[in-house]
Amino acid sequence: MKKFKHSEITSEKIYNKRRSFIKSMGYGLGALTLNSVPLVNANASNLNKPTSYKDITTYNNYYEFGTGKGDPHRRAKNFPTKPWSVKIEGEIEKSLELPVEEVLAIKSEERILKLRCVEGWSMIIPWLGFSLSELLNKVKIKPNAKFVEFETVYNPEEMVGQRYPVLNWPYIEGLRIDEAMHPLTTVVTGLYGKPLPNQNGAPLRIFIPWKYGFKSAKAIVKIKLTEKMPNTAWKNASPREYGFYSNVNPEVDHPRWSQATERVIGESILAPRIKTLMFNGYGDEVAHLYSGMDLKKNY
Ligand SMILES: Nc1nc2c(c(=O)[nH]1)N[C@H]1C(S)=C(S)[C@@H](COP(=O)(O)O)O[C@H]1N2
Ligand SMILES: [Mo]
Image (tube, helix red, strand yellow):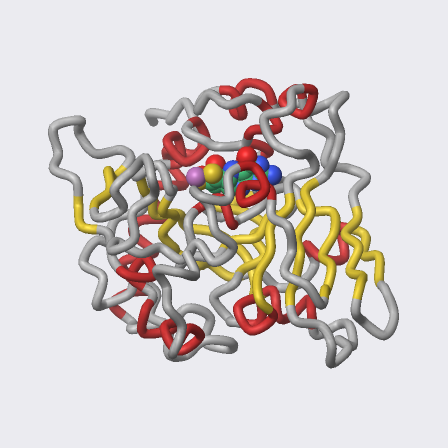
């Protein structure tokens, strides 16, 4: 019998079969948490076939390992993700430090969600993960807390990119509390049914599907509840280009890139770009979070 050279080829095939089965059952994204969110958003025709395992794990943005798309895959190979712990602190009754094993023991489910990078490309990634609200519900949040800040590990010995002032390290991101509590805001523990590869943010990263990719910070060591809006790494580096909200919005262009369309990673170079959808196609689920807000001002 012929053997596949890479196990991921096999699992990807099985994966795609299983996926169409799940889809035909009309099964939702985590029956427990999110009955109303379909596995593949029906109103988003461009939420389709998952990107290949190879593309998801070799075309990355992870400036701690360099600014080239191939750098994280090459340089993060031996990045130590053990021992690891995640602190939850700030405006809460009692801070908590969780060993990563405890977080990974929380039941993950498959969530096929689209990543839209502000640079104008997208991927559909079969993540494994659970809602961040499950973690946040482990602590008692004080009423004055308004935001949640995420902090990536600072380890310049292992992360060569942190030896250069490309960004103000450590990488900081953040959300409003209601955004953080939304069931689509995911703690990612893996992809394609496997543990999370280092280049994708092992051992844990956050994923917010309706926002540009840079909001989804990798290799998280701290979650801090704050009263003030966090000073996020990209906004800090270039406030004109990157706002705190950074919702995917085809009508608000980045100063250097139109956001109207996107290139689907894995498609032929000749394939036409597809239209970018408001909130990356997740508007039915999240638009209510921004009712009454001027999203041109709050970019
Ligand atoms: N800590 C950290 N997180 C990060 C980044 C980074 O440079 N450092 N890049 C962001 C950007 S710009 C994108 S598009 C996504 C890419 O995620 P992926 O490599 O898993 O596709 O990660 C985001 N998270
Ligand atoms: Mo990005």
